Image (tube, rainbow, N blue to C red; front, side):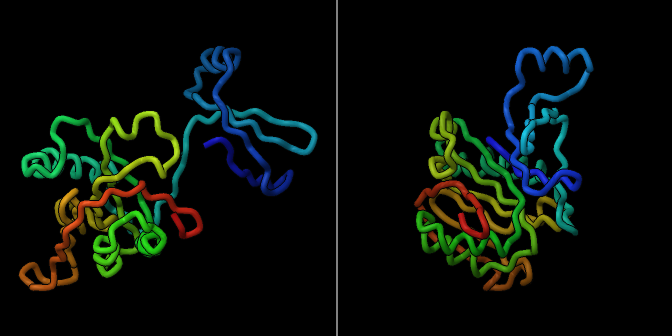
Length: 217
């Protein structure tokens, strides 16, 4: 993240703020003060600039989010380790990497319209699947393919898990599991034995990792 936009009621709106690494002098100053900062933010005013230090980040969550992201990530890792590797769906000899994010389900579904790299079958399943307002998505890929890559379009995803963020039970929260050979999605609004509860489709196509900007990847 090279820069951010800052709003200052006392000075003005939409000020450019550069996010950069700490200099050696700044690191020594921060160590003396005992601050946990590891990033410098330089705010550019009209004729001057102000340097401040980032010691933390507050991310507001939508209402009714009950499931923690780390729980969704650990559950996905467990499924990969126990089910996917045992079933031969993923390469056991390669290190995996997981990317977890919280997103509005309608934004995620809208993004599928523009992701031509994702298979048509997978997009169809997800767009027709009932989802809560916010979902946790855990994408997985292989570390050797992600190492050294910066641009999201170069991070190849081989599958993902979708969790209901409003559920407190991670075992009941799973809405969809996309393996490198198939997709299994669950319509949680229907009873367990209902014939239309499960959506199963074949899929072997990898795609770039999800990126959202104004509703579009």
